[in-house]
Length: 171
Image 1 (tube, helix red, strand yellow):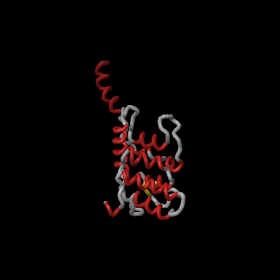
Image 2 (tube, one colour):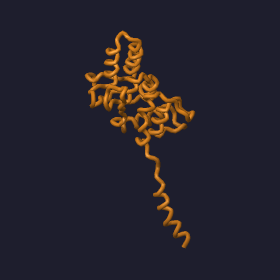
Image 3 (cartoon, one colour):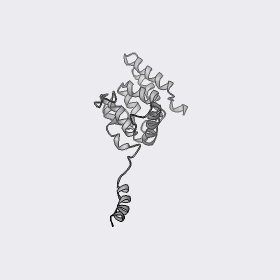
């Protein structure tokens, strides 16, 4: 009787064990706060909290190569791109992309990782303002012309352009 019970119970046990959902958008809710505060990661594995959040949502493991991690992050980004938006009183685009929010917050590290390391889509047009991140940065350059921030914004523009970012009319 015991072997029969084991044969019947085993499939139920296997069904009860769920594989992790990958990518997992449930891990993203605090991403805007991590970008806006440029908080450092306290796990010791990453420099910034946003890197851990993005990696966890994409199911990146320590064993993954940089190429594999980038592939997983791009897949996660593509799946959740419409949800990778931020709203903040210090950000002038309602439901704007995280990339625009990072530019607004002057958080170059996030922009660098997204564009040069992870190589995510830089050409999403936000429905709320009808612009790409490159359009946004160009407008920020114009708004800050003649200030000390202008050169920083121009460096963002150049980096994004090098990584393949386009203006909306170019799409």
